[in-house]
Length: 184
Image (cartoon, rainbow, N blue to C red; front, side, top):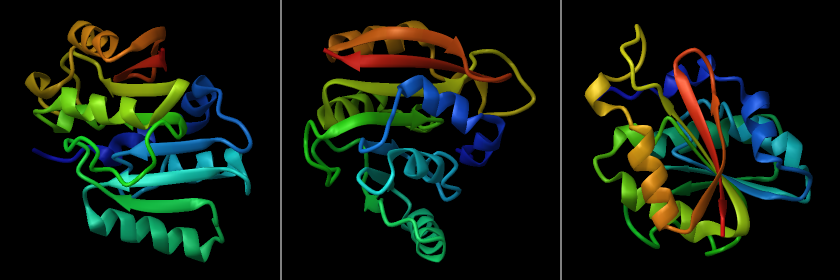
């Protein structure tokens, strides 16, 4: 399947990060960050020197690109984490340590969406926020084939079973929807 992470340029990082209510000193992870750092670098600026941003991806090359840019631009609060999010407890971030986790254009790429959600929930603190952004379930000129797109209702149901409460559902752009969950 084609990787459509490059399409993150279609998404407004400031708008989406504001939805999560991240602030100075928070710990945040972009799960499936891709090589662009489209959300990693803006989040790094928000959480500041007392915060931590984890750039998590299964592609080591993507993490190398993030690390190189972080080094060049003196982002000292970004840590690259190689992980297969489909493996429970496979992400080397302390359990229940994150204030915010991002799954942006990530779930559609996996046949094992529930496992990725489970891993994200494991990493979140109680009352932590999970932001999920995925491609709308309609035909569009961009994005993955419609059969690969994540349907909203099964996603909401799976999230609820994992102890997440839906706080907000919103339009995340011309081709995306967003959901903000809180860990109960």
